[in-house]
Image (tube, rainbow, N blue to C red; front, side, top):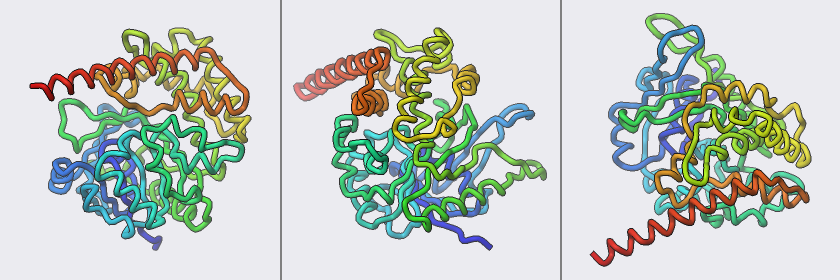
Length: 365
């Protein structure tokens, strides 16, 4: 019988997808979230709904029916030393929030191996990539000091390829998967830590969900890779689709960003792939453009970054800026990517000024 691990996941929204798969494999998971959401999850569990090829409607994974044990905790009550693995599943700017910042420091001090499933690679992970000056990339992060105490060898990255969202009409314990692809994770520096991921991979692969007496093999697996560059395959997708949803005045769906000018999208995609190959990736580590473009046909909403900016967000994950600065370290420049960076800078500047003005009015009132 394989060992069952205890996993702490920071972020109960997107994190509940990975949590459900680990619970199906018999592992225990604690989700870190706000007190109200924690109370809801502790009383009612989580629901993750996903499409299944050849089956009408959505299949629902109810955490209460799974072999693993789930609970939810607030950042202040989490005890990271009690866990075998920590997963980072929130947006990068959120890690500097009060309570979360202190938890991050405790995780680093406890030296628990960490697997990020956010789009933005943690700074300690970038420090593992030969030839990349991670210290010169601090401007890409909301607060780079959050990452200072982590050891690079204890940090890995999992490409968050599955697309998911919280249905606005549902409670915070419900997540719906739009694109049920796999989580692709790079190994740790320590082979023992990588072996833990490989055990989780095997357990997730073997797990089946019982639906009306039928044992169903669900999509969204955990796939462990030797190369540290495999998760960087997401960069080309993000720069071609997610960040090109963002216009000067309005946002557009990912499908339109990709297929509105397919030739330009292909050129941007291949340029980012070439950058990853220059860093040391194998072209085989990357996702072919045709496969990405086909998946993009089903992405009918603007990206989460675009929606956040349109809603007045004053910070988002800046993979656009990260790719631009990494490319500059290698003497490369791309006009379209630089234009995207300028557009996002403009949105953030306007949103921050509007937020400051609103705060000033509230203070006077």
